[in-house]
Amino acid sequence: MCTLAKRDPTSLKSPRLMPEAHKGPARIWRTGGGQGSAGSPPPTASRDHRLSSDLSRSSLSPRQPHVSSAANPALFYPTPCLGPPPPPGHGARKSSSQFGGTTSRVTHSHTLLPLKGARGPRFQASLASIISRRILEHPICIRFPLGISSNTQFAFTALPPPPSSCSIDWKTAGKMKKEMMGLMEDELSPSTPGKVKIERTHAINRQLHQCFASTSTMFLWALFLIALTASYLSFQSFVDSSSRYFDASWGGMQWEKQIRASATVRRPGGFSVLVTGAAGFVGTHVSLALRKRGDGVVGLDNFNSYYDPSLKKARMALLDSRGVFVVEGDINDARLLAKLFDVVPFTHVMHLAAQAGVRYAIENPASYVHSNIAGLVALLEACKSADPQPAVVWASSSSVYGLNEKVPFSESDRTDRPASLYAATKKAGEEITHTYNHIYGLSTTGLRFFTVYGPWGRPDMAYFSFTRNILQGKPITVYRGKDRVDLARDFTYIDDIVKGCVASLDTAEKSTGTGGRKRGPAQYRIYNLGNTSPVTVPALVGILEHHLKMKAKRNVVEMPGNGDVPFTHANISLARAELGYKPTTNLETGLKRFVRWYLLYYGYNTRSGGLAGSAKSL
Picture 1 (cartoon, rainbow, N blue to C red):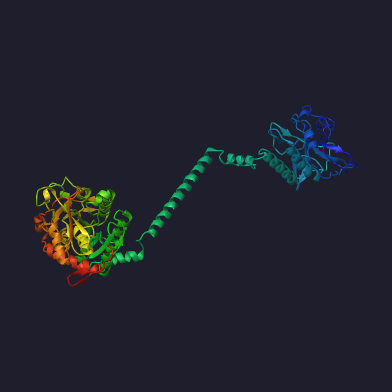
Picture 2 (picture 1 turned 120 degrees about the horizontal axis):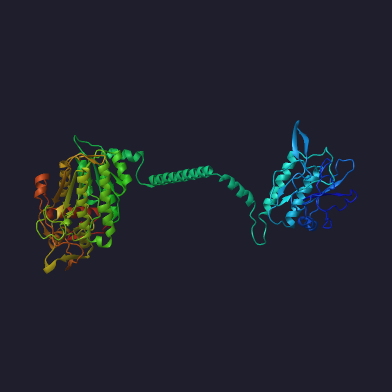
């Protein structure tokens, strides 16, 4: 227990705490007579628990002692001691005190504070400092309990009894209580050499315990955390969507205005057509033809680098000069497709976007799956969800006939033996479109093109690369089939192909679905679009030599197993009967037009005896 030792007023030169020699038991005093009066020790006090020896060795110098207001002045010094609490009722009584006119009954015998675990000299010295400062500021008269107790306790009282007029107000007592509690909380996290002290962990743990004390509180905290997480995810999704929107090359009021202007129909009964692959070879020519006759046309192209993108940009500039707006985007972008159909209710879709080329599939097979299968599905998904659903015309290929040996190729022939991945993706496209036609009521027409050539053509085609190499004086490679048989192709001029595409749009019936639901059977068609006059590759080279007025350096080799077929030959009777398709341009005429365009586009000049000049890089 903590006793207050009475000291002689003359010994003020070096006041200090009670020395170790003070071995008497702690004494409990009351402000009146009766049991537990002055000189009556608590029977359970034990000097084995006292801390006076530790305090006497500490470096603490207490404040100047305070003289009480009693007649016989007495000096009071705190002496913290450990010991069990006094027995119930020992030295306790009730007294009255006035606080703002209100009478309170308080117990003044003991004030108990918890001491959990062992305490060292530093703690004892700090505690003594707090008690000294607060007690010496007021005549000691503890008349209230602080309401704190533990297995190991502090109790302190006065010796001798203070006068009845002495009191400590509640505000001072509260400050003293907080300081002592703070000291004990600090002691729970002692400093250790070489380690960082963790401050006030006890208080933090107590606060956490109060927060999560009940099941209802835990449930509310869980709901709060879930709501906070959901809000964060929603905000992050909004930020990501906004970022993608602003980073995209499409969108905005001006963009939508251009789309609507380009899609405006300028003839009675005209169509509003979305042309995919509009900056490609066939796409450019079809878009120009539709625009010329007064249909509304909006183009879509991703301008990939399969061949020189500058040629695609030049085609786009040509379309722009004729009032056709081309959106730069990918057919796999579902958001873009949905936006296009939201801005314009297209009546028709001319799907010409694809990864072309037979031999390139060996180098980059994934690009064929991405464009020719996944891209087709993405477009069909947008079409079947559109309201109204557009009629779809799309480009298949003569490559689907694969290893078929029956000539000419007819739409009813077998197409289950493709010779290349490109052919397989086109065959898959025919099956996919049939599925969407059957389930969703999409009106679908597939066109099997046969070796299209002409101005603004593809640089990867044989006639294009032969022209470039002949002009540059480089050798050309000419393939031959088995038994030294020359390869033959059904070369079809671009203008004839365009006529077949436009006729397919004109004869396409409306889709029967609405909002992705089929209302009745829908039209499904497949046509061959060719010239029906195959020409051998050596004959093609001879025509080019004639128009270029230059001899080619030929390198004739056996055809490798890279997916090419020895010949193609179209049976166009079905297209002639149902579309009115009738090709009119032979290879001689078509190559002449191509050479003229090539020389102008790449900047060649004619001279006597031939052609010379510097060409633009492809």
